Length: 390
Ligand SMILES: *Cc1c(COP(=O)(O)O)cnc(C)c1O
Image (tube, rainbow, N blue to C red; front, side, top):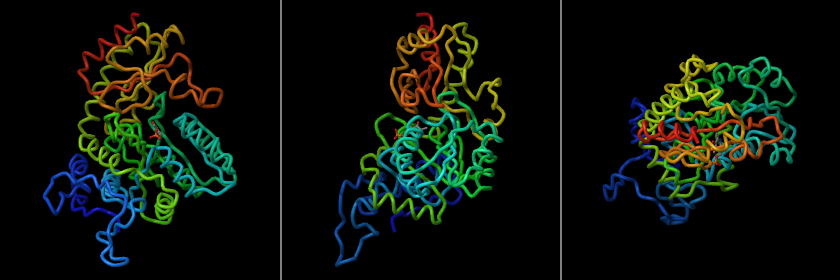
């Protein structure tokens, strides 16, 4: 027994769940916010007499349980598992679902760290992979036909070119060959997109990004339906031990309370900036699913409730001008990561995507990525405007 008492998962809406699921007030004091259980072990009432199922903090901790219950509710799954980072969550999933010799099909624009983990860590243990354009369903079908395909890894919207792939159609193709269908939902968050309801088997998060939302915590999560895979991943979490710590779990829960309103503002601000940049002479192209000329604008409108806070641009004058743009903003700060309340700007080919240079995931050198925060939109527009003049 590790799940917190939860009376809120029945018919409540998303914003209500985000504030209440797994968040019962403390029964001994009435504290409305459940405490941070900063404790490594739990006293037993006689040998094996556990209070609430807790014995040692690696197997379960009430603060982590409350986050796990919350994540499962938001994604519409049964089992939520919180890890020390997004990559720790991914690693636990891969080691649970795959054996040496198995083959993974993944998008050719997945997060660079995901590619590095599968290619360089799991590759050493006999895992093969093929990277394909997930918007080309025939190419995906061909790649899935390879012997030993056990897992399809989807990331949509993708990073940094904001490609949108069709989760429902891909899940069907993956299931036709018996593969586990995984969606990295970090860029959208469950406020915008719920992959399990579209047929996926597992949702992966870097909770570092929109779920935490305040750039103050590193964390990761998996959400699954009950079943054999969920049991295996739960065992990996316990036996390999890459758990989320209580303070990190608590900060993530605190961030999630405002997830719905944050994503609303992130999306509104990003749409306005995308429209501004689309008309700007220094910009060759804007990659944002909320623009009508995005190749998957219609699919994104069906699959997502809003278009999100991430966008990229191709700078017309090339790599040097893109560099200058990324180094000339004032409100947008130059940093890795995304999804916080503050706006960030990045130059993927030397920053987030440096690890995939020379691979099939390489990013063009004139691309600049924006994580649009929730500041005043006129300040953000003025900022990118002045930076492009420089
Ligand atoms: C950041 C990120 C990850 C990795 O998560 P960490 O918390 O940094 O380990 C995985 N996928 C996506 C899409 C990300 O943006």
